[in-house]
Length: 99
Image 1 (cartoon, rainbow, N blue to C red):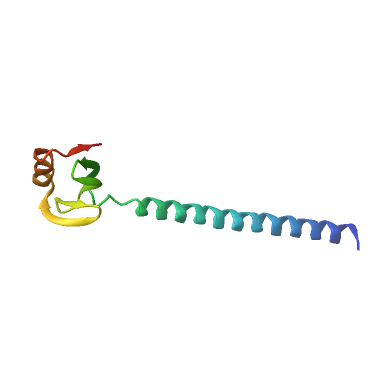
Image 2: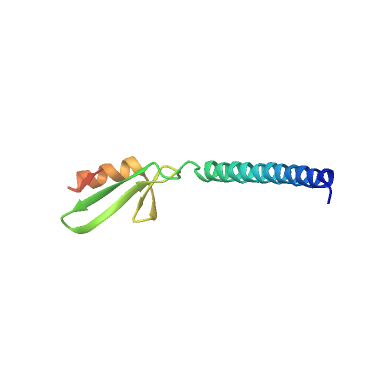
């Protein structure tokens, strides 16, 4: 091989290498962007308004949550009763519901 041919091969390989790097970086940034979008869209607002643990002398401890529709749920079961009313009834009956 002559010097020109060697120089041409080296330049061609450098160009290929730069092109491969650019393609790789575009692919890399695309994947990072897609993962970021997936993460952000998966963090939708929670369906519950919050939960508290309650205890009462006559029952075991249980979890009271406010559902997205405003109803109370006890240990995951929707009671069909508005959260504020349900909580107030529990407190009136002597239950202790803390954060």
